[in-house]
Amino acid sequence: MPELTWQKSTYSAQGANCVYVAAAPTGTVHLRESDDPDVILTTTRSPLHSLIRTLKENSQRR
Image (cartoon, rainbow, N blue to C red; front, side, top):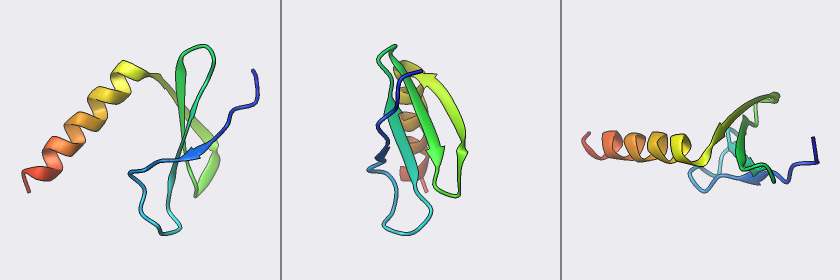
C-alpha cells in the first residue's frame, strides 16, 4: 500500500481529539482518530458522504 497523506478533518475541533482523513489512489478513503492512530477505517466516498450528511442533519435537529 502506498504511503497515505493524512489530513486533519475540517469537522475536528482544535482540541486534542481529532479525526484524520486520507484518500488513497485506489479511491478508498481512510479515517483514523488521533487517540488511536493504528486503527484505520476504510470506506469509499459515497458511504462517507452519506454518513456525514446524516450526522449533520441530525445535529441540526437538536
